[in-house]
Length: 142
View (tube, rainbow, N blue to C red):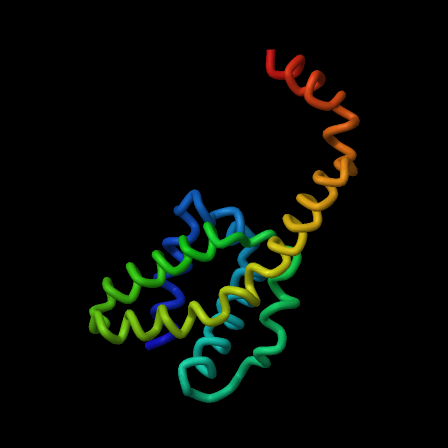
């Protein structure tokens, strides 16, 4: 059942250093997040549509979730489903379906990284300048 898979995956997230920081919240907040994930997956996998999927991107936009983090979550979902005895083909299908929301979940971080890179190319990287440029960084590292 989806709810059990979410619980197993969340337990793994709390101890995985790649994603733990996204899941270290108070109990009340964690219950809300679990419920939303369950509702999203229910509708996403063909069950009752309990979650408005247009909320996926705005809900994750400011979280700085990168492809690295998303891949870690995919790993944890795969492990969780395997532990629950879900057939390997069903696991692959689930992960492929989940991968379709990758862009919605990682967009915020991607946009900010692209803007930072463009600013850096244009010499507008304020922190770099405040640190004294390359000389300041070298001095700091010594």
